[in-house]
Image (cartoon, rainbow, N blue to C red; front, side, top):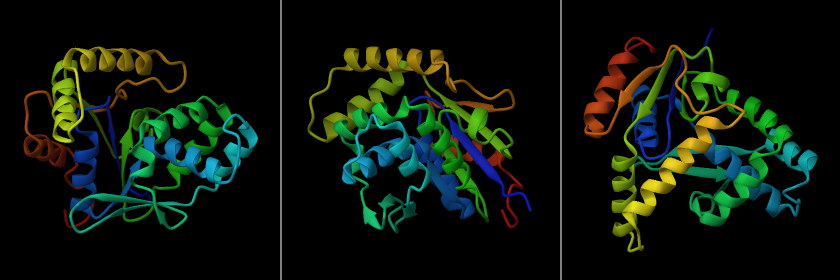
Length: 226
């Protein structure tokens, strides 16, 4: 039996994570936060005293990564690495920098490609990322690609930072987002782009509820009883 897979791709700040979580909860599917795997790989390597430039050793860790994504009662996602909650540990600036160091290693990317595919288990999977529909799950049942203007995404990020009591500069955030988009789109390996058969949803001026309703409409019939 083929396991149904829903891919949700797009740049940062478009609501991929929220929509992916809602879809996973609605269908009772497993959830994959693909970007977190690079952060987890780096964290696991450092905890074992492995140099992040040691491609073979880091790739071995990536291949055998013991990670579980759990939804708690409040709808938040808890990430367990070797049965330890590292949800906050992998969201720091340092974790992001370490992730970028291992992400350039071809053997690590190859190892995580299969590791991501291994998440596709019954009853189904919702995969959140940038190349889920184009590279990792090219035969996915439904492929969604979320987009939004850089200005809207920067405003969302700005509000998040201010709510956390952190300093933020809106113009600077817009520039950072535009630069990151350009890097993602122009990279040689798995560049950011919609799959040829992806459904593009612009979230710029729409509520999460509206986007989720449309996403659900496109996923109709993907699982029995839904």
